[in-house]
Length: 522
Image (tube, rainbow, N blue to C red; front, top):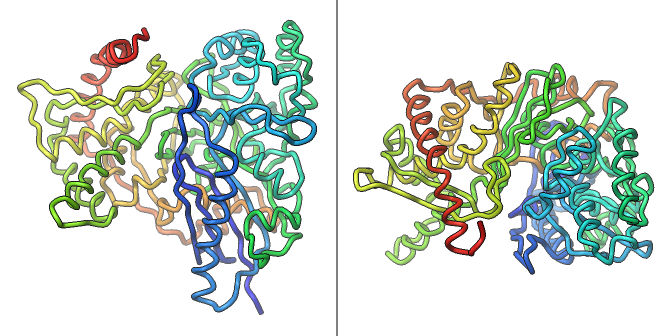
């Protein structure tokens, strides 16, 4: 008897990853494809042709691995797609794309964000889909009146695979506010519609937005054309269940077992964000805090930073090139392991070095653009150990500033989980993060698999919920015997990190000067 398998696909900012799990939720094969956003005419974007090229390559690598081990392609019972949240993808009634895909990384919607936040009395960050839509209206962009369908990247892929225009509730919560019914907030939709009508936009939000589905609800099946998009060879059959598409925040919560109140998780990649599942509503409106949901629809406070580990990756690339020049080539895993462990041996405050990892604008610190920067004084101690520790601390610094808001709201946590490639080298980034949060941080054995594994879990849950809520399914079925490693914050690390963070925050005006003097912008 052939075993059932579940496929999770995630479109991250630098990798498209496919993960296949078995009925015990263990990874049996994986594949990936590297891609990168482009800065085209002032817009961070990806071409949609890259979506399909990357997906077929990632799945092809997965299938090749599985066939090599088993002699035949896998039998797949359910598929799930997740991707970077937010952004702007719009299509006309023929399915033609009307404008460049505008990703979460763009900070071009400041006016729209401010107006919507005031009108809706709900924080609408610049990267949210509704902010991009309203900014296009304010800019009098010609394509607006032709919009028939607006969606996210995950929603777009799901649509092409199934023909269904739907979104998982977690992904939807980064498009437009969600209410207690786990669907679009109708009163706020009416308010937003008033704004659109004031500008004669010629569109109705209620008709152009996808339907919202909660984890475990049906969301369509794989069509013949959709199957060919994943597997052009024709081995993958149609008719496979495809569960509601989700955002990377939701799959991160699933992958780290953090969907219950008083749990939180941190996802570290090109961007970095914390998701805290709330027991109660916040007492005030905070521009730094997004209010989103878990894939089950429960309220979550999200602290999102546009800049995460990319600058750390860039420096690792420099050292990789050095090793190659020295005729001592190293695998990337060796480079990261060596550099990260060097960071553990650095001075607790980084030796007085200062680093900013801003490749893009950062709303939390009020910056409209990015200029990666390393600064030191003559008294600073420039060593490899201090450089790497400073780069690691810098990766979490903006998140620390945003998390202060939740501390002021007296939001309490029982556990903080973390995942992402930065945690592949055991204990290093985890210990720095524990110091940054001043709270225990847990990392599971699947932490480096990230959201693709989390999406595969959602696919398994959608195929058979076993009559359980998502939280109970994770606790009783998925994580019942999963290895979790928890690190307590070291007092010396905490003190050193706080000293670094004070220096970091005090010197933020350097970033504004760098932006102004290298571009002429203020």
